[in-house]
Length: 167
Image (cartoon, rainbow, N blue to C red; front, top):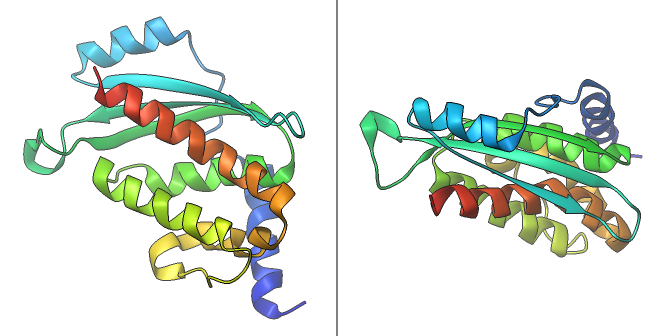
């Protein structure tokens, strides 16, 4: 195993244990009401990997973008809960660190880059400058059964983002 692969494996294992952004979620209606009082739009998505049983519920809060920009909301908060393999749990943790604070447009671009890398079957080398720790999942792209595990929280994010933007 190369030094880079070993580093990526270490990043995944550390995030699987630390689980950044993992919380016990309050009821969605309560979070929506609190968010609305603070000028936020809140939505969540629950996704299940039917192949292996991994599941994640991810909640996104959107607020005004930079300098109150109303045309491109900012991802002000991301929290999640879930159960599953170390890949899905680490992916949710890294997603939280990577996308929190970005504009919705930037978060979507990063999601698209991550998805393209995972679907490449190892043909696209991950760009750490763009993906940060999410580049650690580049090796996962060689294992189609594990791609669904890594994508699960990102699919939940995308669905929650769409829902939040519709409010």
